[in-house]
Image (cartoon, rainbow over all chains, first blue to last red; front, side, top):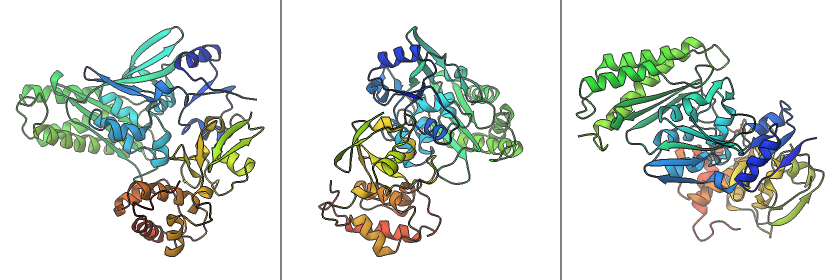
Length: 295
Length: 162
């Protein structure tokens, strides 16, 4: 026996979740329904979030986007490509058109798979996850949201409301390794964002550690190099040694395992390549000079 | 539980639906609409692709209760009331894009969605639109032919039907 709970408002959804903490939220169903179809999971109840209209909305205020947890990837791609380029790029690599029509960033966070495609982009862009319960609202930085393999910082009575990100003020990139161009669980993935106004670099590693994670030493190295050489305001081509060192530091930040999709050694190697490559792309974009902090 | 929704323009009711059941199961086993195929049950193969409120989705990944009051269009609903095949279906026949036929219903819905949005798709756009539909027989070449043919035949005046 299982209950199918179908709130039509956010306050009702929160009330139900507090009364029934064992209810499993389902939006696009691209993870939850697979578990049900294969009998891997028999929750006491499903909490359908499709009827909560506000979850499927996004808004922008003062240069910051509040992305409802239930906005499908297809809409992130078509509606937010300019504002959130890294997340839109990552969204384009999710599954297939059918999956992108249903799957949501909120669902990716709820599942908290280390291989979730949106995570590297969220980490690189300093995303903050808005979670809520009848007790109130918490704002959790993405870097603190992933707590273990398929585990996140949600309390049993909490639901993911939205994701908050700055409108990009510098170039962003995302790259993913897989065996084909569609329907691929990442072998490894990398997200990169430049934050010129803060003279900072953001990174995110996917599918190469128990959780998605940043490559902090690589971020500090690159931002330090850019600042020391005055490249934020007067960008010039980067030296090979900077690009190589950045790739090495990204690879060192990972702690991958051998599994059916790839070996740990391959993942480290590929991450270094992705890091160098995405750095090349963002820097070329930055040197194009269309960014406000660029003199 | 009971689920009431519109299928191919008709209001339908399914009773004794299990709460964890998929839309695909409801269509095939409860409503007698076996056109949408059941293969991977994990959204990998696309053979159960249907329109949900006019958006192509994998029916195996939609919980039955989620379609309450909503509109579903399956491969059975692509042809007109007069049994006239949709131009996309005709093009699949004309191009010989069917071998075993198992993937065909899902490909028809995905291709139908593409050509109504874009009647001059490039090959790359066709491949991208069909990336969620696996065919293990044809090697896709005849399917590509069929979609090109369908796109050429779907002029704005005959564009979607419903």
